[in-house]
Amino acid sequence: MTTIYDAERRDISIALGGDAMITRRMQNFKEERFLKLVEILRDADVSLVNLEMLFHDFESSWQWSSATYTRSDPHNLDELKWMGINAVTAANNHSFDYSEGGFLTTLEHCRDIDLPYAGGGRDLDEARSPAYVDSARGRVAVMGATSTFSEQSRAGAGRPDFRGRPGVNALRHDITHHVQQDVFDALRKANLELGYEEEHAFHRHFGFRGNEDAPDHSTEIDFLDNKFILDEEYAIRTALNEEDRLGISNWIRGTQKMADWLVYGVHCHESGPDGDFHGHSRLSPPHFLTDFARWTIDQGCAAFVGHGPHFLRGIEIYKNRPIFYSLGNFIFQNESVLWLPPEAYSRCG
Image 1 (tube, rainbow, N blue to C red):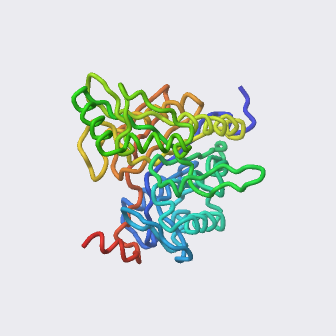
Image 2 (image 1 turned 90 degrees about the horizontal axis):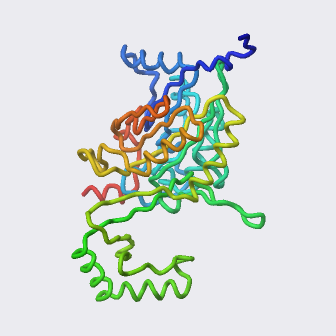
Image 3 (image 1 turned 60 degrees about the vertical axis):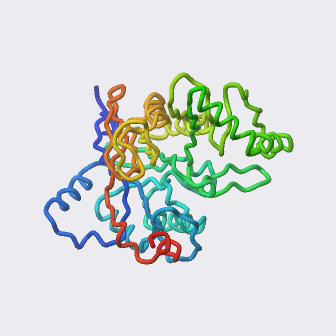
């Protein structure tokens, strides 16, 4: 079969990396293994990483963060391009460390040096939209989301009469705690005695809980903003938010018409029930993430790449396509963030 374009051969090399928390110049390093890594990135047709760092000059105030307040000199973005990085995902739990301004300034710096990004933007549609990288072997679309985020950082859709909210493409999920009868009864009694059940009813009556229906208290209760289900065994179960899945599916469907290859990345600190703890996360990915990863492949994505917990998780070959549940750290220069707000120091004593 005669081909006109190399992309028609369906033969491409894509290098994928985990979290890039870069705060220093990389061109100074001359170690042999490091230079071999750079060679791999440059030799690939397309190289992608997650940008878990903000690039600004402290133009905006910080928000509360339970971890590092990420900030790097904007010139360090050039170091990623020097290494061979062609595009980044920008949705993660640090995106709003320096509020909306710090995030939008970071995206502006990416545009200034022609570094395509996905996963964040000036409204929800822009946050869900892809970044494109044109290579000799075909056009690659990159899309990104994060399941770990603050409500302030979640991008919002606009209306004809109202502008959307800047932020990240948030991948929400529901959590249910399944408990046996004795624990369920104790939680129900605590809800009644502490007045929470009456408070929830009041909030529903006046519309403070949206269109939420009252639960069947014989099998389900809300306790301290957690949902508990009566069951025969103990379990914590997670399920993907279907509204987010639908919105993302619309963008995937349109993107497939514009690119030869599609890679979806998700930043996820949440865990499954198995494996040892490493920091705040277990080795196993949560159920909603495996569900979403396989679903993106079903929708036509060529690969799924996870990151977030700062260690390696498993790899799955699903329908002959790779799912990387976490690629860990690509660059982790967390210790050389230049300045932090006072509360970051007081938290550590």
